[in-house]
Amino acid sequence: MKPDRMEPDRIEAARGVVAAMRDLLTLGLSQGTSGNVSVRHGDGFLVSPSGVPAEALTPESIVPMTFAGTHDHRFAPSSEWRFHRDILARRPDVHAVVHAHPDYCTAFALCGRTIPAVHYMIAAVGGPTIRCAPYAPYGTDALSALALEALEGRGGCLLANHGMIATGPDLAKALWLAVEMEALCRQYAIALQVGAPVILPDDEIARTVERFKTYGLRAQDGPAPR
Image (cartoon, rainbow, N blue to C red; front, top):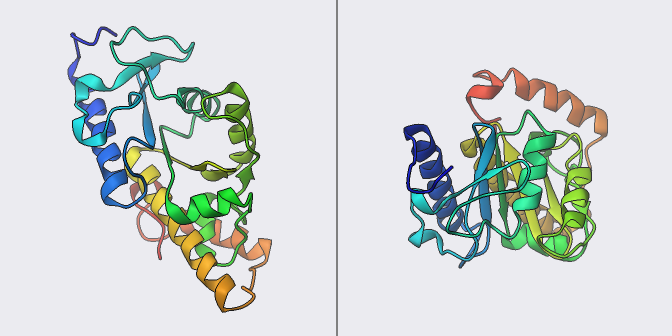
């Protein structure tokens, strides 16, 4: 995994991470050097480096890591590499992880709030809630363990007093889910100002999860409807 000897498939995967990091900015999901992205690659994974602005990233600056948590790259990996590593190691269905601090997701995370099923699109996360993991310091094994618990049976979660995580079978779908999670949180915040949002029953969300699997294209070929 020498940084000066990049194979074509790694270059392509690293370009995807660079593009996703820039998308976080253009989509309004992150700012400055916050946010990080990883993608499964070979027998390890690629993760964005620590403290490098998205506009300065190149494929060569994306850090290849092993699942043992080692690397030999000139850049340090994101401070959150542990939960990226642990999610990818624990979840064979996940090939990409996005972490960001978008305003509405983060606002609910600051309050330690779980997002209930106020809109059927919550089924895109895989269940009737978006859980909020309890607080732990960033970059720690404790945070990784709490994130894994909150992601059980889910594609995304909030991190208390921190931000959010979205996962997917590829980077495009992980980014799409991050956008959907922020939209749900924004709509929920507005609804709370209007009145008392009506929460859909769990069985309705379970049916919607199943319906999304066969909506239009196969589930792996495109996102669920809005």
